[in-house]
Image (cartoon, rainbow, N blue to C red):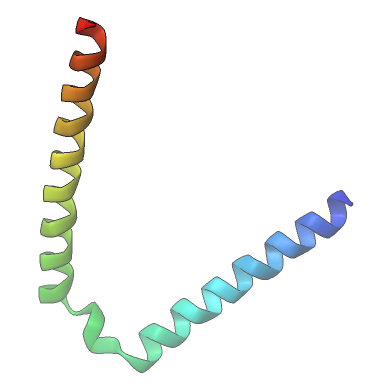
Length: 64
């Protein structure tokens, strides 16, 4: 059973790698420097918001 799960995980990983390769090959403009910069900026802001939200929730739980 363990061998089957390892083979299944390897197959799924290969599928995802193939899909990523196909998307990069078919849409190279989606990975331009400008678009990646905008994406990293947005992800950074969302990360800071999530950290702040978690910090507020931790302080709320500790105060009760």
